[in-house]
Image 1 (cartoon, rainbow, N blue to C red):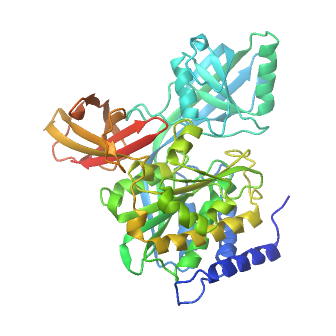
Image 2 (cartoon, helix red, strand yellow):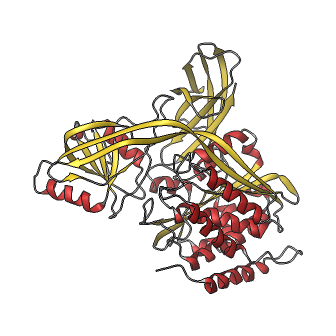
Image 3 (cartoon, one colour):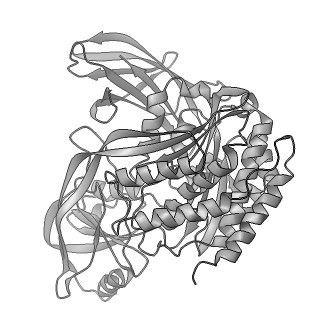
Length: 536
């Protein structure tokens, strides 16, 4: 199938205009009818500018400038690009071969480590849900899953003693994912190589294993990490009555391969929303943000928030994260929101729950996605900033099949219509009512009690962000970063002490006159997370 023609796009645009014209409460006339057309045009330009390798981290300066230009063309006067430093993983040389079958096409998964393994036996671990000692000294064959965390799989096989890993893409093309470790400044990559193969090659290996054959594999990757620059793009539309409060709507401009659904559709949707709201502003300020590096552990949204902490915790009304809006072969579409009493009625009134299949809470999402929130929205929830995430699963995810024709144009128009109307409904609710702390957020209140040239120590009070009830069952980690928040210098686990909360102590040689960042991160797996930041 190919995308529908201009008559369909025009019909979608007219539908948007008709739906939004009767929203009420605004005597300046209906919003522009061009948001869907503008989004589709922006999508085409973004995909045309995408290199064959994708919009990969550290290579997106021109893409960021294109997105900025499109925001300006949509009528937004205040558009900025915020560069930030990131580590980028790349493999200069890599090789995969099965004894008796020769070399196999493969994709190296970033941050997965390097090394060379010769004639190692293969063991099929499927989803690698647990540590399996029988994998010691072997190469693990893993199954790709949309909801299974590759980081969890990787940790399990490393703990099992595996010397390498091969992922079954579950498609007859290759896929890409990252294995993000970030244990310390000098241990960003994992300890063993990991690659992806197409479904047919994985099936051939499994067939040999089923027949009792001792499958031997040579696997080598020569990976390295280097600093690069990434770019967030922020388009700001001031509010009419509460410009000091801000609603963030975001997508991510980076991608594996072409990434039409993941996540060019969302970036184009931001352009469409800019056309709608630049002369029909909300009571509070609207920031339309294209984050870089979502695919590498949401580094772009993390940088955006860290630049604005601690003020962001109170100044941000909430956040709406857009992921994979209208792929051709969608499976399940999900709206995830924490505070159903406040955020669900506008989503219903705007029609968002009508065009998405199911409504989740963040805890539901963490349960479904192996304890993680696989999106930039997780960084907002972690800081106690409410909001919602819309996401659609589809089989072509993170593969070369997510190409320029992977947009259901009719559904895309429906989603944009519902998004625009939902945002208008949120404007009617008001900033104070929306800013209810998520129940999935842990509030952390750290304090430094001792600081010397050799280390820092202190306490951390932890409570539920909504109920204020003490939290005593979280895993709390304290990390020292450099001033620009792009290098880990030291880290340590905090200890819970009954009656005193959590205590921490970190040994590190602090340099006089140098600024540092302390990040406090708490997680109750599959339930809640929290973060606080101190600068000293």
